[in-house]
Length: 428
Image (cartoon, rainbow, N blue to C red; front, side, top):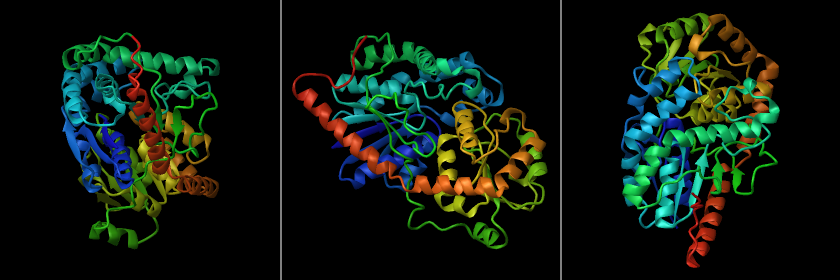
């Protein structure tokens, strides 16, 4: 089978899809990945065929841009929708043309993140199956509220409705640009409602998020889509190896693709909260000047989480789905400093599971609160709980489960197509 896999977002969106492509290739299929150019490092490292989509996600996360402003400010759902609409308006037409060309002879399109509506439309145009892929649980359920809303603000009886509300709001932000591209690029009719019937695989651990009982059969929780520990030819830089060998396991600090926050204030709070303890710091996309850090910090570049996190005493991070899973899989306690999006959801999950304290507000970071969260993560009971969760996660085979589901659903789509039925829900 041949698969075109398309996503658009940060490195946390692209890296798991690169691992899924690698697993599909290893299972004997052809798979290629389309994503933002700045996020394709994992695909190159895994030798996955890939191509860039139009746009620049790093630029979109600049503090002066709409999406970047969400990270640095206390923005609500309307501001988020406007930021997403600005990306859709700028790039949806180009994405649809690029995906349509790439998927011309594919058996199915696997779609994720901000490129989902494009992937669904192109699959409808080509009359091939569309399979969602996500690291964020967006299928409506009564078990928990939409991950894009602060966990505490939604009464339990409105959990399922909150998913429907948020999913519809995201569709409204993308609808105008998506429908224009559907007409211009795919010669399809405009669409009124968001898609709901396509199957979706979640690269999410059942240890962190058991599958809700009210989810439909076509929503599958697979387990984390974790790439191999590190490429065979990878070795840690000499400075990092020397630092790790020079004392007790350090604290990891990194906020992934987050940018737009008050860097000076955050660095000051980090230094005060960590004190003289050993720490490994990854600047990511933050723009933090590492020269401001004291000598007990070892500054690193992009380093495989699967190799690094088991060597850490705890992990301070932003709560993105990928980092949350990788830290927990390593058996490391977390200190979560969320900024936007689904990060509060994952922070809440870790807190409920006993592997982290309550989240520390990333938009107004308090050194005292951060220090208390570090102390909580260092307690024996927290460390034991994190180790227990890590063992459960490592027993899962998320990629195998996802590949099996993708093969099954693609074969079913072929059968529908053979009798003249479009495999994609084409309801208006």
